[in-house]
Length: 454
Ligand code: NAD
Image (cartoon, rainbow, N blue to C red; front, side, top):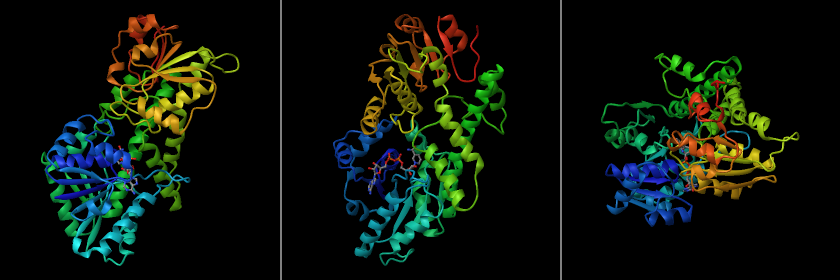
């Protein structure tokens, strides 16, 4: 099939590359000229495990191309994916300007070129209920009747950053929302090779498909947050959240995943999607109370290590002048360079504002962090610099904070870390170490929801 993907970010680039790997002819479009030039030159713009091999093969075999010209991609396409940003607007709702702007442009092009033939337009972005209808209306506004030249389908994406290629190639399910049998048949044909192991393609109406994506993310965010609150309580009563996790995760009604306590969720999806669903509910006159709590608790959770750090390192005014704090991990989760809403950034802002010297290391997310703090500068008298390794970051530090659970942070040479630190103090925001081992290795240690032996 011939496919156009509009928006070449995490979802568009991974999706486009994987469709090309499956033998389709794919053109990816983006308005970011630098991004398109980089991709045309055969260099990736994001880090995602496994992406490079497919990307290079797609380019080499001419199945994967990049352009800034929407018309070029649209003309030959059977299926057009909109993988555009839907960031939170001021009021928390999903900002649809990118999606509707592109829909409007597509409408213009299709109206001017009726000979281009039938297209399936697919909302891949996470969008509120009713967006498929709005996209249809934006295209029809140019004098086209839906079903003649085009149909709009909602096909939410469930990939996880850090495992995006694997998730895209072997999705646990594909959700397709459409009332058009013709579009449903096209989508079925496109996705069939991805579900050969028997995972379902679930067909439903557009509104239900749109709601499915929000329901999934909101439930996952709630599960994490629930566990973080259990951990906060464990801290107070002397229970160990890791034991509790195993104790409840073996119940098949609960399941073992998404039960790990830590310093809160971040990323480009959970925070904005929970906010957007909360907003949708409000617009319908319904107060979705759980979601409000999830957002509030998560904001607090990101700062849960601040009071203990201040208790041990700050002066009477709460200042950290002259203190050096090492931060291991900048990405919002391991195996990605994405730092959007990363808890590590919240901590760094806090420490720098109080005068600390922060030295940070991340295997993939230093450049994205640099770019973020160049756009939204740090405030305060402290400083941030980047180290070349986890050991270099820890060297000379008064405290080490683990903010992302990258595998390489799990089994470092603890003796080397302790020797190099000014004070052997570790705040483990992701529970990557065993408390007893840390005490044995000579650290003062604190984690999330687990007691540290005396
Ligand atoms: P992203 O910000 O990484 O990428 C979006 C891309 O769209 C950018 O490259 C941007 O330059 C481009 N763009 C903006 N306006 C454009 C225009 N008019 N024409 C062409 N390109 C344009 O975003 P993302 O993380 O890929 O997310 C895209 C959507 O998918 C969002 O709705 C998001 O919620 C959803 N989603 C994301 C993930 C994820 O893990 N990142 C997972 C599932 C769903």
